[in-house]
Length: 229
Image (tube, rainbow, N blue to C red):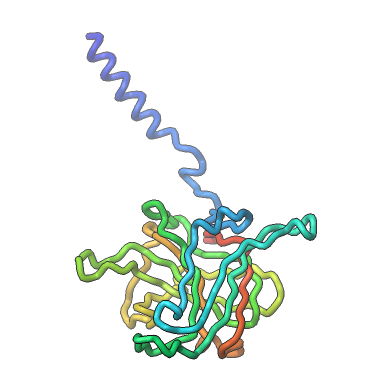
């Protein structure tokens, strides 16, 4: 009887623990930090890419601003560089478009689950250019010939030289394949997000945005997921 009673007690305790959820389990917080550029350790979570990998001459850097000079200035991330439409004379690549740079997060440890949220928010200060926010999710095609993550993109554009909080509903992100929108009815799975990126192109974007070759600079304070509904 003692063994049966111990087994019953263990089962009862497990059931009790499963039923006693915290309020955060029942109602997730209204916001969740994904990236916070308040420490130089944040740089370890990102890598840079540009057309220079294919013989282009664009360049980019990602730095954490030093707030010590102003005393109380908070640390923020600065994604900056130069966009060029030229290519190296030694390049053997032949791609359709030059003049792009990006910062992409290293893959999360597994994935992050944002199923309880409906909006991506970011506190940024732009330079008049249009940037692209990309969310990467687990591949919906599970085959050896298709290894790339699914990508979902939305434009990021704010007024120049002013901090703003930009909010992008998740349903505004469009499915893309190598920069081109997929003309199909697909839905993002926000429970299986494996990474994010911010990028800039010398050409394209929203009407009124600055285009063409030249310098770019985007400051980022933080990126969050919001529950607004």
